Image (cartoon, rainbow, N blue to C red; front, side, top):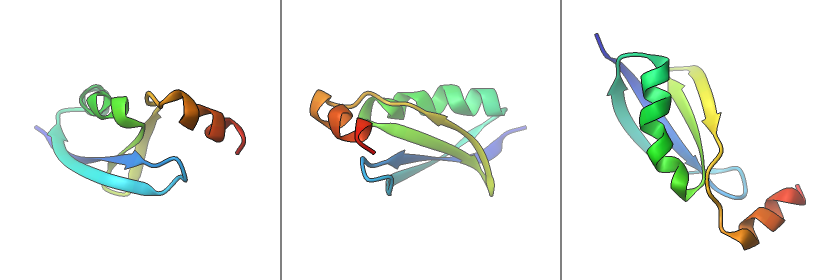
Length: 70
C-alpha cells in the first residue's frame, strides 16, 4: 500500500520554493525518491503533517558561503 508524500525544495532563505507530490510505500522509499530533487538544494520530505526528514542538497559554491553565515 502506498502513502502520499510531498518533497519541498527549500531556498537559500529557508522558504519553500517548490513542491512535488508523490506516492511511496514507506518513509525510506520516500526519502530515496526525494533525493533526486536534492541536486537543486535542500529538500524537506513530509507525509501529511509529519516531517520525514531533511535531505541536504548540492548548492553552488557561492550559495554555500552565504548559508554558512546564517
